[in-house]
Image (cartoon, rainbow, N blue to C red; front, side, top):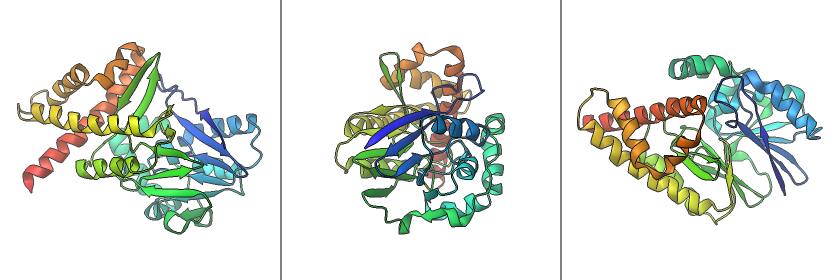
Length: 293
């Protein structure tokens, strides 16, 4: 099976080499994730330039607007395409108004840059629980998102953000958790363990790169979650004053998986710190909920 990455260029500084759709060709033409709404035309142009006259299926890992927003534009160009998504995501694809409003609250100007998702006809959507596509295995992997799915197809694992975000920066691997509020540590860990129970195989991330061995990278991701829990909890115990900043400094100083940040340009560092802050807020919220139990 041929797998290609299609980068979806963005206008925001620091957001190049961040969004990708994976294209699988083996009789069917399959696209994994569709990027933001405002760059749907760029995705279609790139797919067309690569000779894709038809798309049979879109695999949607989750319905955050930076992964599902471009779906309406993609489907408009490929009227034969069907979308495999989480059962409980269908309502939000048919009427994305609640999804858009919640995205604005969490992401603010970044959401505005992504753009609002267009409604999708329910007839185009296949609930994951009834999808019977040959050679496809769908794994529920909540954590980064409640309705997150990972797909194994053609002995390749398309993990979305269940194992965090993985980039190659120069010659350095960079790995960052993706655990925005509302975050459930045990659920995220369980999803990684579910993926680790699969055979070792190439793994493809929603942002942006791929690795040959899923077990190695997923084990690093698991250990990183445990490390972040320890580091952030230590800072939480010291009080609320400048908590976010202290957590950020401690993580960058103590997590070897973040060393690649020193090789990034200023705009990319700003992007990474924006998403790191969201992840830290997820952990802080998790600790507060635990204290209230």
